[in-house]
Structure formats: structure tokens, C-alpha cells
Length: 376
Image (cartoon, rainbow, N blue to C red; front, side, top):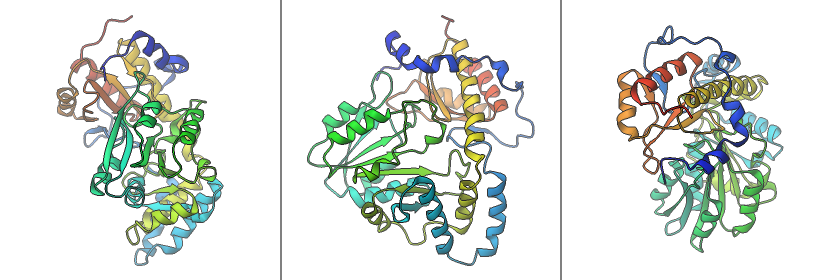
């Protein structure tokens, strides 16, 4: 795929998000060009983590969970499954818990993608499900993104054949931050054979603001072959605790559970997850401050004349006009960890959204490391 956008493609990409991206930096708190106060290690902008961490209620639940450390987590597992079922309007038997959503992705490969079958996915996308498929000895078929860096659903459909056991849709997509429209996704599902499982990864769901997007969580009730995964790692700030879940038809949820390791969750993670689910402020507050900081970053990139892909997530990709490898190393030497190189997009750097002061340091370093484009 080309490392630059055509003028027409760029126009389509910017579309409705252009106005938001060019917000005046003064709408954010004043930022300091110095390293963040109290920083004791590198600025971590590489793994799409939430820099604000778990909410206060979740941290209190973590402390209380110590009293149950000697017990297996069966009882609280049922509480968490019940709360998720209530919030999503599904049966408790449709919820599958995992050690992070990547654990549920592994279960899906083991349950639905046996040796000799195929899995179809975008390129690039989150690679865990593709790596797990190699363990099951399935064939991985990668379909390049469109010129706007979105899933090529027509191309993915054409890549499906009688051997295709699963189609993976990361929505929003990692690493591009782009979405599959709700209408396009359901139309795509209707064109696939019902024997082909469609795995929709919604790790970044909570950050999306585009009205054309809609969660796929209601689809398992209409399409038995749809499995949706979510995580507590992103908006809930629990990446280090490892908790995620899947939603599927009751029959497919049972198939997933049969592939789970015994007691694959912990008292601590479940207690924190339950507290997060019942704190009504967690999602809106984290979405607001991370999305505001993302818009500030995009405005700075645009001010420098840099190409970037409008994102619906807590990360952004920008074209550094050269190999990302040396650029990432230059950032590391300055104490800033950024995303790795994606082979199909070697000139595009993925940067996670940190706190405002961290992003100010990133922008200052970017201007030193990578030449700016002339302003349009």
C-alpha cells in the first residue's frame, strides 16, 4: 500500500472529522515542553494503554480483593458475567470471560479454525488472532486495506471460499484507527455463508464518535455466526490486570468456554472489572479527555503539514516520510516509546494518546526527528 494518500482519498478521510481535528490547541490545558513532572521512566506511547489507569472505585476493589486471594474466582465470575449480560441485554450464558480479550481471540481460533481451514483478515490489523491461527495450522489470508486505510470488505468477501472458517474484523481497526460502518458490516455479514464465523474485535469501541459506527453486540441475536470481543485494557485502564470478554450465541459461547484454560481469570481483575462496570463516570470521562488530546495532536500534525489518518481510537498514525524503524529508535533515545513498524505501512508511525503533557513532549521530539512538510 502506498505510504501517502491521494488528494481525493485524503479528502474522504478527513471528511466529517476535519473540523474536530483542527481544534485550537488553546482548548486543552497549557502544556509544558519539558518532561512530565514526576516522570520516573520513559513516556509510553507504544501499546495504546490508558495513561490515567483504573478508576478510584476499581483501585479500592483491588485492595478489598486481597481478602479473597486464597479462593478461586468462581463466585465473582458469575457476578461479572451477570453485570455484563445486564448491560448488553444478552443472556448470561452468552458471556465468555478471558485473561484479556486476546485470550478470547485465542479461544475463538481453537474453537472455530481447525487445521486446514482459512481465516481472512485485513492487512494490517491486530495480529493476535492471526498468530493463534498459525498454532491451529490454519491458513491466514490477508486482504490489503482500501486507499482510505479502511477494511476492504469486498476484497475480504472475494477472499472467502469453502475452506474459510473465520473472518476477523477489528473495528475500530488497530493500527489505523478507522471504522467499518454499521450498515456495511451487517450487509457484509449477510453475504457470507452462515458456517463462517465473523469475529468482531471491539477493543477500542468506547472511543468512537462517528455516527456511522455501531457496536456489533446486537448482531449475535440475528446472526448466530457473530462473536464480539471487548477488553478492560483500554477505556477502563486495566491493561496490566488482563481481563476481557466475548459475546456470542449461547451455543458458540459454550464452544468458546470449552477452549478456555481452567480458572482463566483472577479475583483481583474481576473485582476491578466489576467496580469499573458499575462506575458510570469511567467511560465518558476517559473518552472525553483522551479524545480531546487526540484532537489536539491531530491539530498539531495538521499545523506542521503532516499526513495522518483520522482516528476513532486512543492512537493516531502519521506519515513520517521514511522508514519508521529509525524514527522509533530516535524517539526511544529521547525516552519516548512509540509504536513499532507495520511492514505493509512502513512509513506510518502509530502513537498512542498519553496525557496532554506527554503529547507535548512527543510533538516537540517529532519536530526534531522528522522534517515537517510545508504547510498547505
